[in-house]
Length: 108
Ligand SMILES: [Zn+2]
Ligand SMILES: [Zn+2]
Image (tube, rainbow, N blue to C red; front, side, top):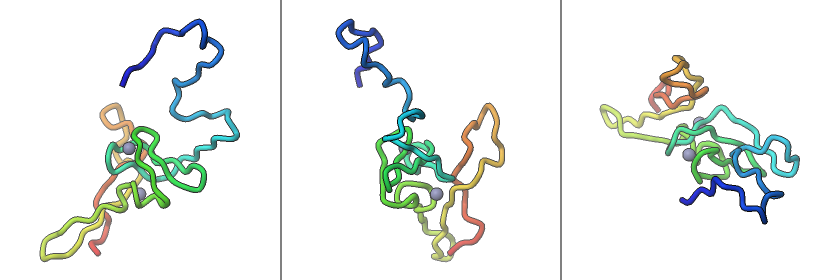
């Protein structure tokens, strides 16, 4: 967890670890999805045929293996209620995320 803020003279030509999503590197292509990480609510990105969280180290073969769509809980009457990633209905300073995890419209 050590972040080197000072640029070492020997490594001055090899910086660029500041952005979690390299936009100009064609070899490392991240595509934003409509899903958010179930662990940290970070955006889930499609990358190299799999899906990764842009914030933490979560990764999986499908979005629902790391996003809110995969969360299942025991609801009233023993029915399982599913969560789902949806566009943030109250996006603003208090909740800047583009997508959030909410209850799915129908319990399954
Ligand atoms: Zn995450
Ligand atoms: Zn999802």
